[in-house]
Image (cartoon, rainbow, N blue to C red; front, side, top):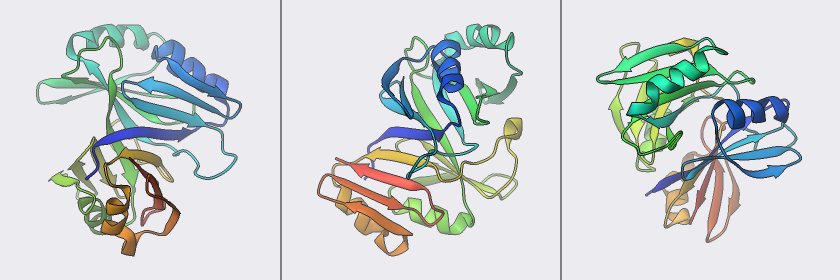
Length: 227
């Protein structure tokens, strides 16, 4: 039903430190510059960083993951370790490094089967939710599939256009937290079909047209479905 992740939006108190982090340290291209918003290229997905001056706001303390080529991992570690405290985790044969951006978002750079060079996309986003069962049911009806429930029973991992982790409040790897009031954009051939799958459980329908639907999920996260 949902075929791609169009954007992930984060909130920044000040844009210049965010620009320095993402453009200079993570070597991401700025696609758009507005007085209160920057849009960075993460492969085909936009990483949006915006000041809190309206709705939807970007996510706070959001944990998410960039995909990088396997062979570039050591270079990224060496490059970033001079300026940041890094943590590492292994997932089978793959490794990920973790660091924090200036606004407290936990940024993961993980080895994925991508060409690169550099950051090639966003492969995981973590949302904080009140009820795992309710949130998992909601996203299952949008086409996500549960693949892991976690030993702590405080999280569920689902696969869809990207990996979606649903966390009840807790600290994860590198003391990461799930994001609150996160703004996600999804590609779909039928935005209204996606709406009808979950209409009875959304907090609100913010916009409804043939080409674009915007809703708030049961935990207040903004979801946009665009054709």
